[in-house]
Image 1: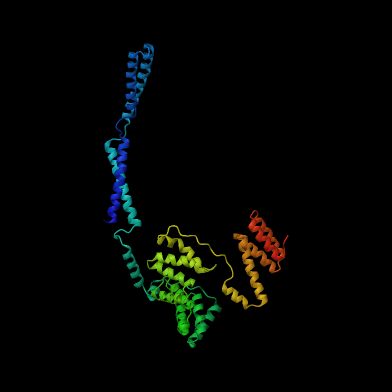
Image 2: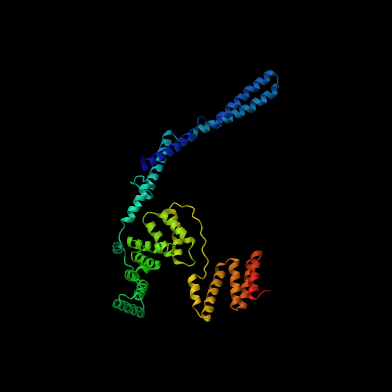
Length: 407
């Protein structure tokens, strides 16, 4: 049975219940005072029986009769008033019921046409999956998407940078097999907003790299193509992502765009699981992780997940790349880098707060840097923040002792 017919029948059923309640409630079988009137008459007959049996005297019987008679008159007057105000006529009630039915049916129909899928039959899951696969296979190519996309206005470049970029283009044109030149060209064309030129240079990077092309190279190619198509993941971009994930299944940027492709081709359920798994291992500060978080609620709704888990946001800290870079620095440069990280942690704790471990780490780091006065100030502030928390206070005290500022 079509869904529209079921909707109308459901609305009619609700209207019938409401109409029955309205008619029954507004026109009862008898006025409220009729019951009281019957009780008083039975009491009056009981007085006569008690008088005949000698239970009460003549004087008491007259007094009780008078009181009951007064109540009978009051109940009769009340009953006449209730009859006068017994509710609307049958015509009025029928019109009201019809109006309620029209509002229910018309409202249901209007709501369905606004937010429903009028004209579409019910679709089994198997057909939905087939339709999603057909949509993925037959979606527009990269070139077609670029033709339909409004070109992005490139940012205005400084004259010196524009001259350097043009010089790089000329140099690469003269040296078509220069791998490093194409890498630089792809990066700078993308930075300048020339996404098509960027992914064309990146394609050349992959060609020159051959079998040694990295997962990051393919991921960068896919990203440039997606930017050129206005956020659309074309079949060509999908293939680049596939190559990237075959080489590095945990590569965050590639997994982000892979989930985006799935969401665009009718599989938000799989996209949600991909993004959820990606966020679990996302490093702090990763821009693609922030992009996932900003879209996660909408994707969860589309995937039919109405109680998504709350994932903790990783606190910022040095990455593996940071540690490798630090090993190549001089002692003075490493000291500057450490001081910058300490300042970043200090600023975050001052504005957002943090765990006792982070406060203790900051105090110990300041001690290593020889900034004892600042370490004392941070220690005093931490003691105030975690007052009453014995475990936290022990961590703070241990860090202060390590920093050489124990009280």
